[in-house]
Length: 76
Image (cartoon, rainbow, N blue to C red; front, side, top):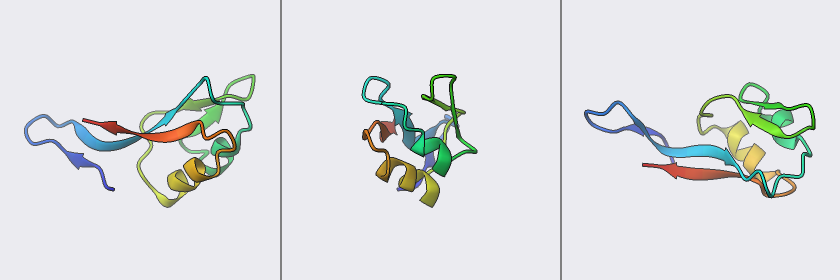
């Protein structure tokens, strides 16, 4: 699914990368796969650095998250 711009608003609609902070167990796989958009805090938990575009790497980060804590949420 690609991101689109809503007519007249300039807002991006589509899917955005998100982290379920309760489910996350701090493996850091997401930051290894997508380092340009995800960094780790001092305890090893992910910090999203702005909206990550849907890309092959982003889809792989979601797929390989051991805790299934990284997911796509719909942005309306």
